[in-house]
Length: 169
Image (tube, rainbow, N blue to C red):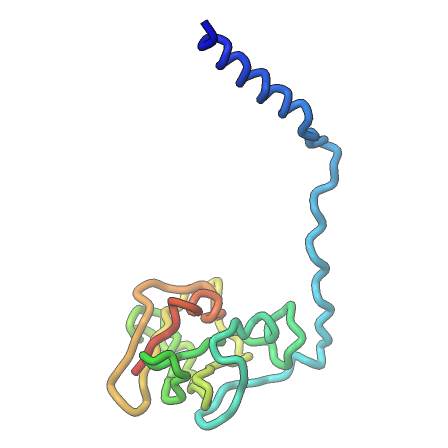
């Protein structure tokens, strides 16, 4: 005899809970996003990684500081880190950005990694209007790695961190 009352009691409990939940008023203001950083124009200096050069924070998203909303010098258009199979920075890396997969088509950009395996530049690239294919090559061996699909972003470490680094022996 009590079984038919259980669904009714459950429904009434849910109704009471819903009545206690504040409703969203269509007139409520949406949450305010964080204010954009006022990036001084003096920070927008030309920079490009070089073999045997130095940098910092290998593996982190370079664009967080060296992008339009960061306060690091240089507004990078392409930046990332290549590592060895042991996840150590690979200073012997060269990055190509091309118009076709596996380094094919037109080479749009060539960057050499520095001593920390970081590669970066402030040079203009046609991203995101022209999708490009990244390819990394080892300068001291024949090893290479490439993305089989194009990218619309030069912020390589945005995706290639943690379990997805750019490996190159």
